[in-house]
Image (cartoon, rainbow, N blue to C red; front, side, top):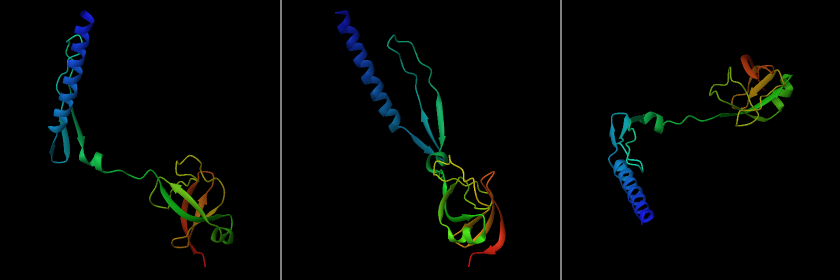
Length: 145
């Protein structure tokens, strides 16, 4: 009999929590640029009260997602001719090419570690490249023909 009573109490508590969560989700309100979700205290199976808290999440945080990486179509080499004639795809966490650290993979784990010149195929600009730091340097002022 006691087991049946505990089972019924647990079932009732589970249903109550589910219904309460659903009602709380329906009462969400958007004010300005944040979403406020008011949480109320809940009871544990031994009827002791759990602490409730107020959480606010910025709408900007919810809707703005930055790309993990930027992709560049480039040439790479130790001479102008080699850099202009080659074709590679590089990745970086920087959206601007000058000063960017270049990687071979979109997970940004394998750095480019050779070459002294890098060419952006979009505009044929030739840039200095530091293979020790995998960083694109200054624009040389030269272009691929």
